[in-house]
Length: 367
Image (cartoon, rainbow, N blue to C red):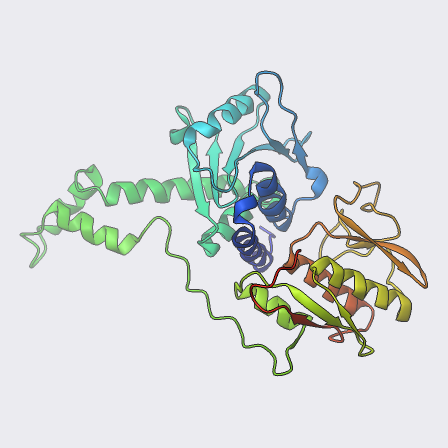
């Protein structure tokens, strides 16, 4: 498989940070826009490969079809972040998968992800092949890699589902004192020196300790790095601060490469002021300007739309400079926005020339 696990882990950390930041606003639509879709993008899918479906009058169509109109299409059924997933939530999508000859169904509320195999007979609980939670970032990265574009295209998803199902069955069998597997192992162990009095419960208990919990506890979040002595963060320092899980940080001012300072209270304003300075003093790079491995999505363009006949910017900011008018795509969380601004600075030779001073915690700023 050719996915980028480091990129996925970054996307997972960013999704968790976004959820902490906007927990009260995560309905189904915002969960899809802020959590689920960015994770699918990190797993290799283009925007056009994630096709929202309009429900018919009976509500039979799923929320999304991934890789539509191909022989690799699969179904995504989405729920809001705070909705507890149930196997029954996948029933409608599995029925639709049967009628359309699609094999894989994914059910997700952004935080928990479940993979179902339509080719397995029985109730949805019997068709459940794998689960993952974002708090287990290693496990979530494996899951997203397995449902990622390359894995689906080369068939690796099938091997992943087989191994995960095998792990689940073995765990169930080996931690149940009444199972045939534990009984057989117990009979063998009683014949070994010093184990004649061991019980099946003893065997199952030790195996449970060895196997561990279904979802390991999340790693302890390291403390945020100390602020710079002068109170001004470079953009890489800001990204490190976001990565540490720091709270609702808001900008107060931006210091541009020539030493001039602008008051800003929104992260979008930081992006606008930086783009304007770059356009006035360095010239913008070739447009459309993309960030990282994005193919269908851009950060900066001469018109408010994505490249190659793509969609209009959902959220945008117009920047009027001495060298023309440009549009910034601002439908991003603060982490992604600062990363995009840093990429623009790197592309135009500005480097670490932009610094940000933050508002004291508790001040009211938006964005």
